[in-house]
Length: 258
Image (cartoon, rainbow, N blue to C red; front, top):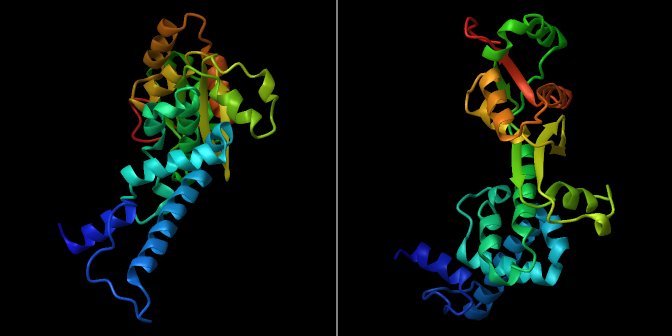
């Protein structure tokens, strides 16, 4: 193992000895200085996770969250110099972390918070103009063939738990005491301007959006949503997606671009 890898491994292992060959410019004890540096690295990574997953932390308390994060940090160190990218594996880690099993919805709340961060940093796209929407809707016979492009920040989370309600309650938009965590919810995450919104989608909305992302035409995507949920309302879903500028392009087979 290279000296750099040995140094990095020692930083994340509290039981590892100070790497050989370290010296201090002021003749102080390198072992003590390395211990301080190691602690600062771990604390900074835990702080980064707390910034990304604030509601996750609130649900279990700061002490538990930081202890759990400390375990994660030592097993999953950063692979990017951009600290904002850190924590992609944290929700999956929580799902397998036995002490967190008493809060079964915790991993999905973390997944929602990660999607919010990704939405905030996603590329931008111009919204569809009213003229473009009107042109497409003026030819209803061709609507089933319509290909729909989604905004780069758009993501959907289909959860067994009330992740939208839990997240909203922690933003002061609802009474946490009245939230029933075991009620399934579908979260739509979208950046509108500079604000990331979390919206509850009716059943079938995730199937429709997944169809768009997979490149399926509108008719096929809607058909899959109706098969999954017979009461699926295509008009209501499209109105919602257009209202939050979640759709960035329309194209028909005869068109080169939108």
